[in-house]
Amino acid sequence: MADRVLFVCHANLCRSPMAEYLARRLLADRPVTVASAGTDALDGLSMHPYAMEIAAEGGADPSAFRSRGLRPEYLADATLVLTATRRQRSVCTALAPAALHRTFTLRQFGRLAAAAEPPVEPADDSLGAAIAAAAHARGRLQPAAPDADDLRDPIGGTAADFRRCAEEIERSLRPLAALIGATG
Image 1: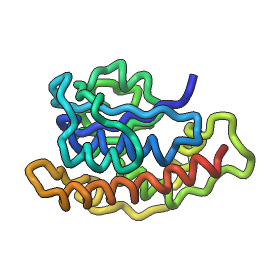
Image 2: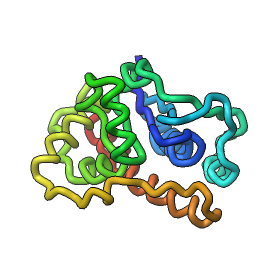
Image 3: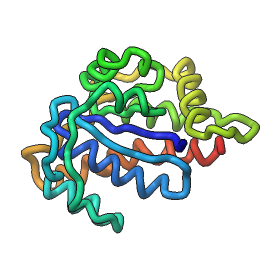
């Protein structure tokens, strides 16, 4: 069974779908599957049009994407849960307390992954090894300001706001992709 990364935001229309599609592209050569959900999502809605444009730029066809509400089993099945905000991280850990040690905000995990030292020996479970290395890095970093962990919601904004959000998502995902590559 492949490792799974679950991205979580509020409505599963903007941030988490963009993260899902960006991660799919960045992790295409790794045995990792990605999905997304929303803490307050209505099932079955299309991705926001600006988010859809960004997802399509990577060569994917996001027209079949449909939002889905967060369920405890999604959290239980995920190897790593990355949320848009601290509030959503709290919702995830309340729904599935066992997911606490593998649930981070996307920006938080990006900082940790960037500071992590990969194991000397390649691991059979590269995502698990990446999570362990990032968690170990937590003790070496100064705490960030609380709002440094939250990814601003572009809903109601312009195409440029969505573009800035996608760039922040990609900046946070690149260290994860590099760490997975270094561990496996």
